[in-house]
Image (cartoon, rainbow, N blue to C red; front, side, top):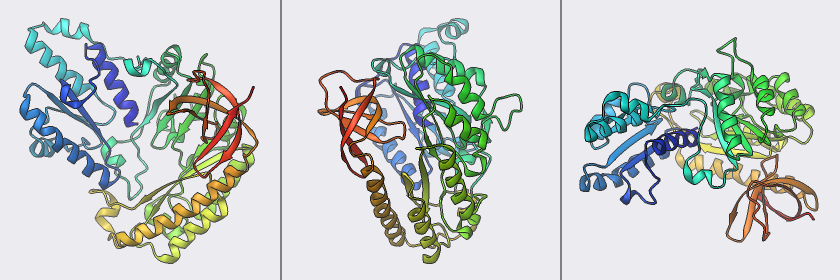
Length: 429
Protein backbone atom coordinates (compact mmCIF):
# COMPACT_ATOMS: atom_id res chain seq x y z
CA UNK A 1 0.00 0.00 0.00
CA UNK A 2 2.86 2.37 0.79
CA UNK A 3 4.44 1.63 -2.59
CA UNK A 4 1.16 2.59 -4.28
CA UNK A 5 0.89 5.78 -2.18
CA UNK A 6 4.47 6.79 -3.00
CA UNK A 7 3.85 6.14 -6.69
CA UNK A 8 0.81 8.44 -6.75
CA UNK A 9 2.69 11.18 -4.89
CA UNK A 10 5.67 10.94 -7.26
CA UNK A 11 3.35 11.18 -10.25
CA UNK A 12 1.65 14.26 -8.80
CA UNK A 13 4.97 15.96 -8.05
CA UNK A 14 6.14 15.36 -11.62
CA UNK A 15 2.97 17.09 -12.83
CA UNK A 16 4.08 20.07 -10.74
CA UNK A 17 7.46 20.13 -12.50
CA UNK A 18 9.63 18.10 -10.15
CA UNK A 19 12.11 15.47 -11.38
CA UNK A 20 13.37 12.54 -9.34
CA UNK A 21 16.69 13.23 -7.60
CA UNK A 22 19.37 10.55 -7.55
CA UNK A 23 20.31 11.23 -3.94
CA UNK A 24 18.92 13.08 -0.94
CA UNK A 25 21.75 15.62 -0.91
CA UNK A 26 20.67 17.09 -4.27
CA UNK A 27 16.90 17.08 -3.64
CA UNK A 28 14.65 20.12 -3.17
CA UNK A 29 11.96 17.91 -1.62
CA UNK A 30 12.34 14.74 0.44
CA UNK A 31 9.36 12.69 1.59
CA UNK A 32 9.71 9.72 3.93
CA UNK A 33 6.84 7.23 3.65
CA UNK A 34 6.55 5.23 6.85
CA UNK A 35 5.30 1.90 8.18
CA UNK A 36 4.71 1.26 11.89
CA UNK A 37 3.39 -2.30 11.84
CA UNK A 38 6.48 -3.29 13.86
CA UNK A 39 8.58 -1.27 16.29
CA UNK A 40 11.70 -1.85 14.19
CA UNK A 41 10.04 -0.11 11.21
CA UNK A 42 9.15 2.95 13.30
CA UNK A 43 12.64 3.08 14.82
CA UNK A 44 14.13 2.95 11.32
CA UNK A 45 11.93 5.85 10.20
CA UNK A 46 12.96 8.00 13.17
CA UNK A 47 16.60 7.18 12.49
CA UNK A 48 16.28 8.17 8.84
CA UNK A 49 14.59 11.45 9.76
CA UNK A 50 17.43 12.21 12.16
CA UNK A 51 19.96 11.60 9.38
CA UNK A 52 18.10 14.11 7.17
CA UNK A 53 18.07 16.88 9.77
CA UNK A 54 21.57 18.17 8.85
CA UNK A 55 20.44 18.61 5.23
CA UNK A 56 17.55 20.74 6.44
CA UNK A 57 19.90 22.81 8.61
CA UNK A 58 22.22 23.39 5.65
CA UNK A 59 19.36 24.25 3.29
CA UNK A 60 16.35 25.84 5.04
CA UNK A 61 14.47 25.88 1.70
CA UNK A 62 14.53 22.09 1.54
CA UNK A 63 10.99 20.72 1.95
CA UNK A 64 10.98 17.74 4.29
CA UNK A 65 7.78 15.69 4.42
CA UNK A 66 6.56 12.73 6.46
CA UNK A 67 3.71 10.51 5.29
CA UNK A 68 2.27 7.09 5.97
CA UNK A 69 1.28 5.27 9.11
CA UNK A 70 3.40 7.38 11.47
CA UNK A 71 1.02 10.21 10.60
CA UNK A 72 -2.15 8.55 11.81
CA UNK A 73 -5.27 10.05 13.33
CA UNK A 74 -4.48 12.45 16.17
CA UNK A 75 -0.70 12.17 15.85
CA UNK A 76 0.19 15.32 13.91
CA UNK A 77 0.40 17.70 16.89
CA UNK A 78 2.78 15.42 18.87
CA UNK A 79 4.82 14.78 15.72
CA UNK A 80 5.17 18.51 15.04
CA UNK A 81 6.49 19.02 18.57
CA UNK A 82 8.86 16.05 18.27
CA UNK A 83 9.99 16.81 14.70
CA UNK A 84 9.92 20.61 14.30
CA UNK A 85 12.24 20.48 11.28
CA UNK A 86 9.65 18.50 9.25
CA UNK A 87 7.62 20.88 7.07
CA UNK A 88 4.55 18.85 6.18
CA UNK A 89 2.76 15.72 7.38
CA UNK A 90 0.44 13.53 5.29
CA UNK A 91 -1.67 10.61 6.57
CA UNK A 92 -1.71 7.19 4.89
CA UNK A 93 -3.10 7.06 1.34
CA UNK A 94 -3.57 10.84 1.27
CA UNK A 95 -0.58 12.67 -0.24
CA UNK A 96 -2.65 15.83 -0.82
CA UNK A 97 -1.24 17.79 2.16
CA UNK A 98 2.20 17.54 0.54
CA UNK A 99 0.87 18.74 -2.81
CA UNK A 100 -0.99 21.59 -1.10
CA UNK A 101 2.16 22.61 0.76
CA UNK A 102 4.24 22.58 -2.41
CA UNK A 103 1.61 24.61 -4.27
CA UNK A 104 1.41 27.11 -1.42
CA UNK A 105 5.21 27.47 -1.42
CA UNK A 106 5.13 27.95 -5.21
CA UNK A 107 2.38 30.56 -4.88
CA UNK A 108 4.32 32.60 -2.31
CA UNK A 109 7.54 32.47 -4.30
CA UNK A 110 5.98 33.42 -7.65
CA UNK A 111 3.00 35.45 -6.44
CA UNK A 112 0.80 33.27 -8.66
CA UNK A 113 -2.94 33.86 -8.18
CA UNK A 114 -4.95 31.09 -6.55
CA UNK A 115 -6.80 30.15 -9.77
CA UNK A 116 -3.52 29.73 -11.66
CA UNK A 117 -2.23 27.37 -8.98
CA UNK A 118 -5.33 25.20 -9.18
CA UNK A 119 -5.21 25.10 -12.97
CA UNK A 120 -1.60 23.91 -12.84
CA UNK A 121 -2.50 20.74 -10.95
CA UNK A 122 -5.71 18.70 -10.91
CA UNK A 123 -5.71 15.64 -8.66
CA UNK A 124 -6.88 12.48 -10.42
CA UNK A 125 -8.23 9.77 -8.13
CA UNK A 126 -8.67 7.30 -10.95
CA UNK A 127 -6.15 7.49 -13.76
CA UNK A 128 -2.48 7.34 -12.84
CA UNK A 129 0.51 8.37 -14.92
CA UNK A 130 3.44 6.32 -13.71
CA UNK A 131 6.47 8.28 -12.50
CA UNK A 132 9.02 8.82 -15.28
CA UNK A 133 11.52 6.20 -14.09
CA UNK A 134 8.78 3.56 -13.87
CA UNK A 135 7.33 4.45 -17.29
CA UNK A 136 10.55 3.30 -18.94
CA UNK A 137 9.96 -0.44 -18.30
CA UNK A 138 6.59 -1.01 -16.65
CA UNK A 139 5.64 -4.60 -15.82
CA UNK A 140 3.69 -4.77 -12.55
CA UNK A 141 1.78 -2.23 -10.47
CA UNK A 142 -0.34 -2.06 -7.33
CA UNK A 143 -3.93 -0.80 -7.18
CA UNK A 144 -5.45 -0.02 -3.75
CA UNK A 145 -9.11 -1.07 -3.63
CA UNK A 146 -9.83 -1.08 0.13
CA UNK A 147 -8.45 1.60 2.44
CA UNK A 148 -8.23 1.16 6.21
CA UNK A 149 -9.57 -1.73 8.25
CA UNK A 150 -12.42 -2.24 10.73
CA UNK A 151 -11.61 -5.78 11.89
CA UNK A 152 -9.17 -4.68 14.62
CA UNK A 153 -7.11 -7.74 15.52
CA UNK A 154 -5.75 -7.10 19.01
CA UNK A 155 -2.12 -6.77 17.84
CA UNK A 156 -2.77 -4.56 14.81
CA UNK A 157 -2.20 -0.81 14.62
CA UNK A 158 -3.62 -0.40 11.09
CA UNK A 159 -7.22 0.53 12.09
CA UNK A 160 -5.84 3.30 14.32
CA UNK A 161 -3.49 4.62 11.65
CA UNK A 162 -5.33 4.07 8.37
CA UNK A 163 -8.86 4.51 9.68
CA UNK A 164 -12.07 2.58 9.17
CA UNK A 165 -12.53 0.27 6.21
CA UNK A 166 -13.73 1.99 3.05
CA UNK A 167 -13.99 0.51 -0.43
CA UNK A 168 -12.77 2.53 -3.38
CA UNK A 169 -15.20 3.44 -6.15
CA UNK A 170 -15.10 0.66 -8.78
CA UNK A 171 -15.05 3.20 -11.61
CA UNK A 172 -11.95 4.83 -10.11
CA UNK A 173 -10.34 1.40 -9.85
CA UNK A 174 -11.18 0.63 -13.48
CA UNK A 175 -9.80 3.99 -14.63
CA UNK A 176 -6.65 3.31 -12.63
CA UNK A 177 -6.20 -0.16 -14.17
CA UNK A 178 -6.96 1.05 -17.70
CA UNK A 179 -4.42 3.87 -17.40
CA UNK A 180 -1.77 1.38 -16.27
CA UNK A 181 -2.59 -0.92 -19.19
CA UNK A 182 -2.16 1.96 -21.65
CA UNK A 183 1.33 2.52 -20.22
CA UNK A 184 2.31 -1.10 -20.77
CA UNK A 185 1.71 -2.65 -17.34
CA UNK A 186 1.02 -6.37 -17.71
CA UNK A 187 0.22 -7.33 -14.10
CA UNK A 188 -1.83 -5.56 -11.44
CA UNK A 189 -2.21 -6.49 -7.77
CA UNK A 190 -5.37 -5.34 -5.98
CA UNK A 191 -4.61 -4.25 -2.41
CA UNK A 192 -6.52 -4.14 0.83
CA UNK A 193 -5.79 -4.82 4.47
CA UNK A 194 -8.67 -7.32 4.12
CA UNK A 195 -9.01 -7.35 0.36
CA UNK A 196 -11.79 -9.94 0.22
CA UNK A 197 -14.05 -7.56 2.16
CA UNK A 198 -14.14 -5.22 -0.85
CA UNK A 199 -17.67 -3.86 -1.30
CA UNK A 200 -18.90 -5.05 2.11
CA UNK A 201 -19.33 -1.43 3.23
CA UNK A 202 -21.08 -0.38 0.01
CA UNK A 203 -24.07 -2.43 -1.16
CA UNK A 204 -23.97 -0.59 -4.51
CA UNK A 205 -20.44 -1.82 -5.21
CA UNK A 206 -19.52 -5.23 -6.67
CA UNK A 207 -17.85 -7.89 -4.56
CA UNK A 208 -14.16 -8.66 -5.05
CA UNK A 209 -15.23 -11.49 -7.36
CA UNK A 210 -17.24 -9.04 -9.44
CA UNK A 211 -14.40 -6.53 -9.53
CA UNK A 212 -11.97 -9.21 -10.71
CA UNK A 213 -14.35 -10.04 -13.54
CA UNK A 214 -14.47 -6.36 -14.55
CA UNK A 215 -10.69 -5.92 -14.60
CA UNK A 216 -10.33 -9.22 -16.46
CA UNK A 217 -11.90 -7.52 -19.50
CA UNK A 218 -9.22 -4.81 -19.77
CA UNK A 219 -7.03 -5.28 -22.84
CA UNK A 220 -3.33 -5.32 -22.00
CA UNK A 221 -3.70 -6.57 -18.44
CA UNK A 222 -2.44 -10.16 -18.55
CA UNK A 223 -2.22 -11.05 -14.88
CA UNK A 224 -4.32 -10.08 -11.85
CA UNK A 225 -3.49 -10.74 -8.20
CA UNK A 226 -5.04 -9.66 -4.90
CA UNK A 227 -3.87 -9.48 -1.29
CA UNK A 228 -4.26 -9.82 1.62
CA UNK A 229 -7.33 -11.96 2.32
CA UNK A 230 -8.92 -12.88 5.65
CA UNK A 231 -10.10 -16.47 6.23
CA UNK A 232 -13.57 -15.34 7.30
CA UNK A 233 -14.30 -13.62 3.99
CA UNK A 234 -12.93 -16.16 1.51
CA UNK A 235 -16.20 -17.05 -0.25
CA UNK A 236 -16.97 -19.87 -2.64
CA UNK A 237 -17.89 -17.25 -5.24
CA UNK A 238 -14.41 -15.72 -4.98
CA UNK A 239 -12.71 -19.12 -5.28
CA UNK A 240 -14.81 -20.03 -8.32
CA UNK A 241 -13.86 -16.70 -9.89
CA UNK A 242 -10.13 -17.36 -9.38
CA UNK A 243 -10.57 -20.78 -10.95
CA UNK A 244 -12.61 -19.60 -13.93
CA UNK A 245 -10.81 -16.39 -14.99
CA UNK A 246 -7.52 -17.16 -16.81
CA UNK A 247 -5.94 -13.81 -15.99
CA UNK A 248 -6.44 -14.21 -12.23
CA UNK A 249 -3.38 -15.94 -10.83
CA UNK A 250 -3.71 -19.11 -8.76
CA UNK A 251 -2.09 -17.74 -5.63
CA UNK A 252 -3.99 -16.93 -2.43
CA UNK A 253 -2.55 -15.00 0.51
CA UNK A 254 -4.67 -15.96 3.53
CA UNK A 255 -2.92 -15.43 6.90
CA UNK A 256 -3.42 -17.86 9.77
CA UNK A 257 -1.22 -15.94 12.28
CA UNK A 258 -1.28 -18.92 14.72
CA UNK A 259 -2.32 -22.56 14.93
CA UNK A 260 -3.67 -22.57 18.49
CA UNK A 261 -7.29 -21.69 19.28
CA UNK A 262 -6.52 -19.80 22.49
CA UNK A 263 -3.91 -17.66 20.79
CA UNK A 264 -6.25 -17.05 17.85
CA UNK A 265 -9.00 -15.96 20.24
CA UNK A 266 -6.59 -13.62 22.06
CA UNK A 267 -5.62 -12.18 18.68
CA UNK A 268 -9.33 -11.74 17.87
CA UNK A 269 -8.94 -13.45 14.52
CA UNK A 270 -12.45 -14.91 14.44
CA UNK A 271 -11.74 -18.53 13.46
CA UNK A 272 -10.19 -21.69 14.88
CA UNK A 273 -7.31 -23.88 13.75
CA UNK A 274 -9.73 -26.51 12.41
CA UNK A 275 -11.65 -23.86 10.46
CA UNK A 276 -8.44 -22.56 8.91
CA UNK A 277 -7.38 -26.08 7.95
CA UNK A 278 -10.80 -26.66 6.38
CA UNK A 279 -10.45 -23.44 4.39
CA UNK A 280 -7.08 -24.52 3.00
CA UNK A 281 -8.62 -27.84 1.93
CA UNK A 282 -11.52 -25.98 0.29
CA UNK A 283 -9.16 -23.64 -1.59
CA UNK A 284 -7.08 -26.56 -2.88
CA UNK A 285 -10.17 -28.51 -3.92
CA UNK A 286 -11.68 -25.54 -5.75
CA UNK A 287 -8.50 -24.29 -7.49
CA UNK A 288 -6.24 -27.05 -8.86
CA UNK A 289 -2.57 -26.14 -8.69
CA UNK A 290 -3.13 -23.22 -6.32
CA UNK A 291 -0.34 -21.92 -4.11
CA UNK A 292 -1.15 -20.52 -0.68
CA UNK A 293 0.71 -17.99 1.43
CA UNK A 294 0.20 -17.36 5.12
CA UNK A 295 1.40 -15.01 7.89
CA UNK A 296 2.54 -16.25 11.29
CA UNK A 297 3.30 -14.27 14.46
CA UNK A 298 5.45 -16.00 17.08
CA UNK A 299 5.73 -14.92 20.71
CA UNK A 300 2.26 -13.39 21.04
CA UNK A 301 1.50 -12.44 24.67
CA UNK A 302 0.85 -15.54 26.73
CA UNK A 303 1.86 -17.98 23.98
CA UNK A 304 3.15 -21.12 25.71
CA UNK A 305 5.53 -23.67 24.26
CA UNK A 306 2.60 -26.08 23.76
CA UNK A 307 0.59 -23.41 21.93
CA UNK A 308 3.55 -22.61 19.72
CA UNK A 309 3.89 -26.31 18.89
CA UNK A 310 0.29 -26.23 17.63
CA UNK A 311 1.35 -23.63 15.08
CA UNK A 312 4.32 -25.77 14.08
CA UNK A 313 2.02 -28.77 13.59
CA UNK A 314 -0.36 -26.71 11.47
CA UNK A 315 2.47 -25.74 9.14
CA UNK A 316 3.86 -29.28 9.07
CA UNK A 317 0.45 -30.65 8.12
CA UNK A 318 -0.65 -28.02 5.60
CA UNK A 319 2.71 -27.52 3.84
CA UNK A 320 1.86 -24.07 2.54
CA UNK A 321 3.93 -22.49 -0.22
CA UNK A 322 4.88 -19.25 1.54
CA UNK A 323 5.12 -18.25 5.21
CA UNK A 324 5.59 -14.57 6.07
CA UNK A 325 7.04 -14.76 9.56
CA UNK A 326 7.16 -12.11 12.29
CA UNK A 327 8.04 -11.86 15.97
CA UNK A 328 5.35 -10.16 18.05
CA UNK A 329 6.01 -6.46 18.57
CA UNK A 330 3.66 -4.43 20.83
CA UNK A 331 2.29 -1.32 19.13
CA UNK A 332 1.22 1.57 21.34
CA UNK A 333 -2.57 1.89 21.49
CA UNK A 334 -3.48 -1.60 20.33
CA UNK A 335 -5.60 -3.89 22.51
CA UNK A 336 -2.74 -6.33 23.12
CA UNK A 337 -0.39 -3.53 24.14
CA UNK A 338 -2.95 -2.07 26.57
CA UNK A 339 -4.25 -5.28 28.09
CA UNK A 340 -1.66 -8.05 27.63
CA UNK A 341 1.86 -8.40 28.99
CA UNK A 342 4.58 -8.92 26.38
CA UNK A 343 5.79 -11.89 28.40
CA UNK A 344 7.63 -13.99 25.82
CA UNK A 345 11.36 -13.09 26.01
CA UNK A 346 12.95 -11.81 22.83
CA UNK A 347 15.43 -14.69 22.78
CA UNK A 348 12.52 -17.13 22.88
CA UNK A 349 10.75 -15.28 20.09
CA UNK A 350 13.88 -15.64 17.99
CA UNK A 351 14.12 -19.35 18.81
CA UNK A 352 10.53 -19.94 17.70
CA UNK A 353 11.09 -17.78 14.63
CA UNK A 354 14.06 -19.91 13.54
CA UNK A 355 12.21 -23.18 14.14
CA UNK A 356 9.47 -22.15 11.72
CA UNK A 357 11.99 -20.59 9.34
CA UNK A 358 13.87 -23.88 9.09
CA UNK A 359 10.65 -25.87 8.77
CA UNK A 360 9.38 -23.69 5.94
CA UNK A 361 12.73 -23.82 4.15
CA UNK A 362 12.39 -27.61 3.95
CA UNK A 363 8.70 -27.43 2.96
CA UNK A 364 9.45 -24.93 0.20
CA UNK A 365 12.41 -26.98 -1.03
CA UNK A 366 10.24 -30.11 -1.26
CA UNK A 367 7.45 -28.27 -3.10
CA UNK A 368 9.89 -26.72 -5.57
CA UNK A 369 11.64 -30.05 -6.17
CA UNK A 370 8.44 -31.27 -7.82
CA UNK A 371 8.96 -28.63 -10.52
CA UNK A 372 12.30 -30.03 -11.65
CA UNK A 373 12.21 -30.73 -15.42
CA UNK A 374 8.73 -29.16 -15.58
CA UNK A 375 7.80 -26.22 -17.80
CA UNK A 376 6.35 -23.14 -16.13
CA UNK A 377 5.09 -19.83 -17.52
CA UNK A 378 6.96 -16.77 -16.31
CA UNK A 379 6.30 -13.03 -16.48
CA UNK A 380 9.76 -11.47 -16.58
CA UNK A 381 10.29 -8.30 -14.58
CA UNK A 382 13.94 -7.27 -14.81
CA UNK A 383 17.55 -8.31 -15.26
CA UNK A 384 19.64 -8.89 -12.14
CA UNK A 385 23.34 -9.16 -12.91
CA UNK A 386 23.50 -11.76 -15.70
CA UNK A 387 20.07 -13.34 -15.30
CA UNK A 388 16.52 -12.36 -16.05
CA UNK A 389 14.07 -12.79 -13.19
CA UNK A 390 10.32 -13.24 -13.18
CA UNK A 391 7.47 -15.01 -11.44
CA UNK A 392 5.15 -17.87 -12.21
CA UNK A 393 1.44 -17.50 -11.59
CA UNK A 394 2.06 -19.24 -8.24
CA UNK A 395 4.54 -16.47 -7.29
CA UNK A 396 7.62 -18.72 -7.65
CA UNK A 397 10.74 -16.69 -8.44
CA UNK A 398 12.46 -17.93 -11.62
CA UNK A 399 15.86 -16.99 -13.06
CA UNK A 400 17.03 -17.63 -16.61
CA UNK A 401 19.75 -16.44 -18.98
CA UNK A 402 19.01 -14.79 -22.31
CA UNK A 403 20.55 -12.26 -24.66
CA UNK A 404 17.06 -10.96 -25.46
CA UNK A 405 15.28 -8.19 -23.57
CA UNK A 406 12.67 -10.19 -21.66
CA UNK A 407 11.11 -7.27 -19.77
CA UNK A 408 7.34 -7.73 -19.62
CA UNK A 409 7.33 -10.91 -21.68
CA UNK A 410 5.40 -14.00 -20.61
CA UNK A 411 7.37 -17.07 -21.69
CA UNK A 412 7.68 -20.81 -20.94
CA UNK A 413 10.73 -21.90 -18.96
CA UNK A 414 11.92 -25.45 -18.31
CA UNK A 415 13.18 -25.75 -14.74
CA UNK A 416 16.63 -27.35 -14.35
CA UNK A 417 17.44 -26.39 -10.75
CA UNK A 418 15.29 -25.90 -7.67
CA UNK A 419 15.91 -24.44 -4.23
CA UNK A 420 13.66 -23.39 -1.36
CA UNK A 421 13.33 -19.77 -2.48
CA UNK A 422 14.15 -19.71 -6.21
CA UNK A 423 14.08 -21.72 -9.42
CA UNK A 424 16.47 -21.66 -12.38
CA UNK A 425 15.57 -22.74 -15.88
CA UNK A 426 16.07 -22.40 -19.63
CA UNK A 427 13.77 -20.61 -22.04
CA UNK A 428 11.86 -23.08 -24.18
CA UNK A 429 12.46 -22.82 -27.91
